Image (cartoon, rainbow, N blue to C red; front, side, top):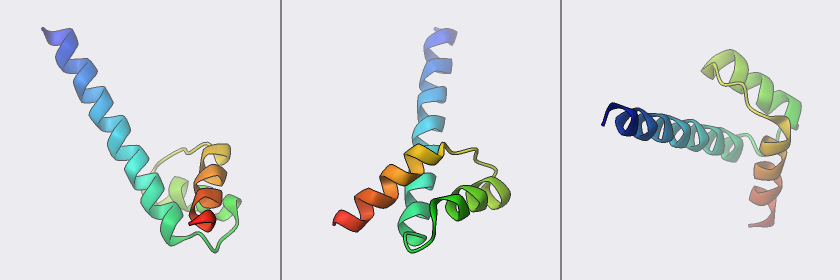
Length: 63
């Protein structure tokens, strides 16, 4: 039972982190990838993968 709760907690945490990255990438779509990654690291404490951020920025420009 405890293991299932932990897995659920980890999944929720990952989802919140991903949502935060998506929100920041959406707001900073006009900035270079390196600046977005740096902002996430410094202000939010999130070590985001630059390739993932790049895909989000590219996704935002297609819409």
